[in-house]
Image (cartoon, rainbow, N blue to C red; front, side, top):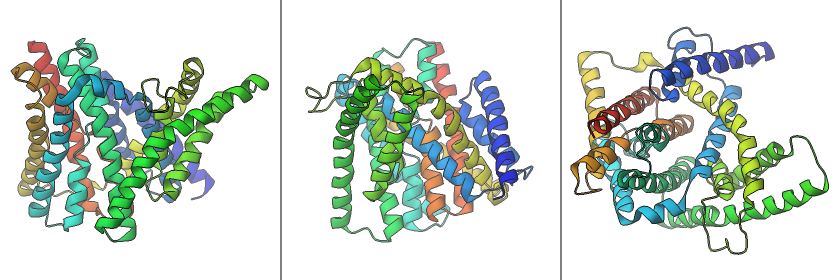
Amino acid sequence: MAIDSFVMSLFLILVVGRLLGECSDRLGFPSVVGEVTAGIVIGPSLLNWVVPHSTLAIIAELGVILLLFDIGCETSIKKLAHSGPRAVRVALLGIAVPLVATGLASFYWLSIAPFTALFFGCALTATSIGISMRVLTLYKQTQSVAGQIILGAAVIDDIVGVILLSILFNFASSGELAVSSTLILFIMIACFIIFSPPLVRVIIYLTRWLHLKARIPGYEVFVVMAMICLFAWLAHWFGTPAILGGFAVGMGLSRQFTSPFNQYLKNPFSYTHKLEQSAKPLVQLFSPIFFVYVGISLDLSQLDMSFTGLLLLGWLTFIAVTSKFIAGFMASSNWQEKWVVGSAMVPRGEVGLVFAEMGRQLGVIQAKEFAILVMIIALTTLIGPLILKYTLSKE
């Protein structure tokens, strides 16, 4: 890609993505919906101002690594422990039911390969809790019983989602899924997630000591970006997606992360807070690029706009929504809490889009399935908050 084409493409991605993201946010919808829409508008589906390119794809991948870093920063093992068995039950059902239901439905009705159907199902397992949390915060429900169950289930969702993505990534790359190799990969992922955050803490202590010796402008953002790049490379070296490295660095910085090493590696809160805050502008700059690029990669001409095609899209979306409600209904004996938890688990948002884009890049998901999957994710991202708002307003 020539430099003039690159800078103009980046300009359009940043400006149109921010404008439509802000419009979406002001209308009460997640900004991610506006950002994907921006990609559709400026991409081949409509105006054809920006086309998919490997250079843009690399920047988009950096955006998703930073997004997973941000999710890691918000991961709280304490909240998981506080919400207890009900959160575990909701999370596990919220993963298993959509995986099986949407996987089988897509295999049967879309006539796709079994592994593609598995990827399709996995993409619709992870909940985008950030979207629901905005609504819960608006109604002051984050500290309620339902709010704590949702937060606890979201922690499990994030961790299991990353593990599932890593296993599928490994299989798609190697072309084989033997029990022994899968078990070894699972152990490697577990070791990476367990030992990387303490190693991040060691680096934090070292960089803090160096910072006291030599004051350097922009030191905090340099440290965070260097750690993210290092651990993304380590994750790739382990045979897992590079995004796992960003997630691990985020957990290492998180003030709510606990591990057996905590008594020796306590979080220097003031310094890690500076590191986390310094990285926020990077996350806010690069993560929207990923969502806009998803829209650019989406070819709407692949969607079947006939009555049968739209009926199929609606049916798959219905399965994706109800499968999460089944998990939510196991949360409590109180019907109000059942509806709150169920509707909060519906949005797939950014995590589902990460799955979809990874599948497209690996060649597992073709253009037609990619278009359907992105549309289902977009619809669940709109439907979930609307049902949640209605349920909470009744309360």
